[in-house]
Length: 417
Image 1 (cartoon, rainbow, N blue to C red):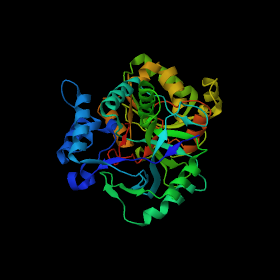
Image 2: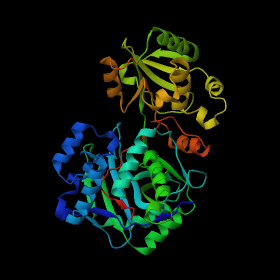
Image 3: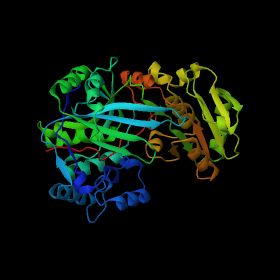
């Protein structure tokens, strides 16, 4: 069961660093060198200096020294009293809807993956975990939060926190996507107890941050014993929250020589209904039923691919759960990436011949430029499928989900000492 606790957060002091908007940043894994430079240009205290450290001979040691220095300067201060932090994100979806996602920041005791505790939903890559472990050792803090889901059909946790949101927010930031992030510090003992009661029996499903969670598992074991390092910073959002949105992540492939192109063509002809569609309809609409994809390659013709029969996926994924056999990314990976194109798990883990795009325009640009040979446009994965695959004890292929919007880094830090 989830052990949810308030935290004595470390956070920026606006009187020293200026507006919060100048010092927060997107997640580290979506920031390139140019954006990093822009963020540092906004403020020398921007969190990207910690989260993506630079410097010789050891960038992680530089991050640790910088983190300590900011605390000595009063740029970062630690709360005296523990709190749960109510958090809202007002945002627009790609189809123009305005929604609000509601959650809260807290500490959660680190548990091994398993039923009734914490479950992953995607496979992870080894490289990022080593990077994050070295950063954690140097800073002895959680620099960025894990985003996790839990079930709360009656919205009991948010109901306990929502009165605090009637007052002024502790902090507010509008990011480059137009998403408005707001935070309220809640120290009321009754509200915190109600949140803990609402989450006591919850199983947590990691939505974003698998690498960081597994890093903290390793760090907690490395330090040993119990203490502050036994807990991790999380933002928890109810699966039933009406503002929860999952967007698709599209697949791009390259290295399609004549043999691979022929194998792919045979598989598509055998297993899929193929229909030419207007370019504006290339990305398939949300829906259930057998796998449906948008497909475009170098000839520029937009096509809709629909699996002829679910039995094809069931046979190819024999040994997997029923939930997994109906997962678009799982069926695509097995039928097309592995069986038709011959990609291995190692290829997929290390982006060897495979890459990802967040939206249709990006995928089209990569194919039209010749950087990639073809693109498969995905449907969004429903939250219920994420839950069901995790409950079956299976992990989805990487980048099966894109929970939107992302959490900002730098709103709160969780000291591990």
